[in-house]
Amino acid sequence: MSLGLVDVTRHRYLLRLIVRKELRARYQGSLLGMVWSYVKPAVQFIVFYFAVGVFLRMNDSLPNYAVYLFAGIVSVNYFSEILGNATRSIVGNAALVKKIYLPRELFPVSSVFVAGAHLVPQLVVLLAGALIAHWRPGLTHLLAIGLAMFICTVFALGLGLAFGAVNVIFRDAENLVDLLLMIATWASPVLYVWTHVRDAVGSGWGWTLYQLNPLTTVVELMHWGVWHPTTDGTPPLPPHLLWTSAQALIVSLLVLAIGQTIFRRLDGRFAQEL
Image (cartoon, rainbow, N blue to C red; front, side, top):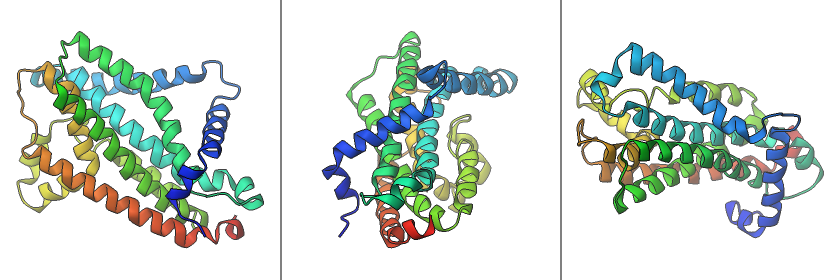
């Protein structure tokens, strides 16, 4: 009887093998290899920086906008890679799923570690840029970065488990996830400041719904940890960030529990449907 995610901790050796396989398959025949972990976010950053920072003049209204922007890009890229890869993980490993039994949660969880391998170089570049901008973090700032990554991991894995299982039955799930990931950058304060949303929707249900998105809190925690120490405190971060962080953590854990439930319900049909 499968114990779900608990079984993953009992098969750490298999998890390491799957992660190694995924990384090798990702860069097989590639000249640059892991260098793409730097190239892709760098190109994304340059495009957004000139489009929003220079052409729309966000540089003039936001100090150290480059750090602000890249902190959000790193967060959203990490979320997107986990969710996108986890959604395709069962279908992509159909040969293994049909031939042998192993805890199927290993495949979505491996997506977290693959995304983590790509996150590290991006974080190095982000922190180096923040240090150039006179980043002097305190303990709370470092804790905010850690909490942001934890919430992002739990939230993305929960969604990945749910969509990964549904994708075996209905391949439309992949397309739905692609749409969600396309929206993710704009549904959180990566390119703009949270005050723009509050001024546009007011302080009613629209603002509450915006804050309920855990990815919004993840990005703001990253801003608190990396960008805010490089400024004089203006513009301010969203009010009650500690409360919204606790709220985002609860929502993410709930999503993980729901995702695991859906995954276990459909697990028995994987081999047949594939």
